[in-house]
Image (cartoon, helix red, strand yellow):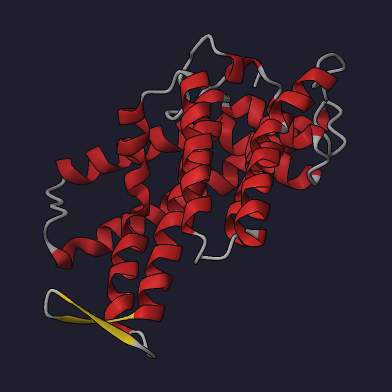
Length: 253
C-alpha cells in the first residue's frame, strides 16, 4: 500500500475536487445518491436539477464528459430492462407511434434510467477524483468495519498479482490448443478458475502467517496526520444539500 496504487478509473487532475479529503467525498456521494433515490419518479424537474449539479461537479473536477459517457455504459443492461417495462406494465395505457404503452411502465422505465444514470455518474466522479488507496483510507476514517477495509486493502495489493497469474494460465491454455470459441473446451477454463482460487487461498494463508509473525494484530496502521478540515466538510456538503433543496422544492411545489 505504501507504493501508492491507483485504479483505471482515476484521473490525475489538479482540481478542487481532487484536493478534498476522501471521507468527505464518499459521504457527499452517498448522501446525494440517497436523495436521488428518495425523489418521487414523477418529479421530472428534480432530476434535471440533479443532472445540473453533477455537471457542475464534473467541471470542477475537470473530468471530460466523453470519459464519463464512455464508462457510464456499464448501466446498459439495466437500460435494456427498462425498455421492456412500458410494454409489460399494467394499468392505464397510451398510444405512441402505433404502440400501446403502459403509463406505469413508462414511469418505471424513467425511474430506473434516471436514478441509475445519476448514481453511476456520481460514483464515476468519486472514482475519477480519488485514488483507490484514498478511498480505503476514507472508509476507515468514516469508521467502516475494519474487516471490510482490510479485505479491500489486501485485494488492492494482490489484485495485479492474481491478474498476472490468470494471464499466464490463459497463455498456457492457448499454447496447448485451447480455443475459447468452442463450448466443449469450457472445462479447461473451469479448471483454471479453480486452480487460480486455490493459488489465491494458499497465498493468502502464507501472507497472513507472515504478517502475524511480524506483529499483525488484526488492524492495519492508520496515519496519524491528515483528515478533513471543517472547510472541506462544508464544501462537500454543497452537493447533497443542494440536492435536498431541489427535492424539497419539487415535492412541496
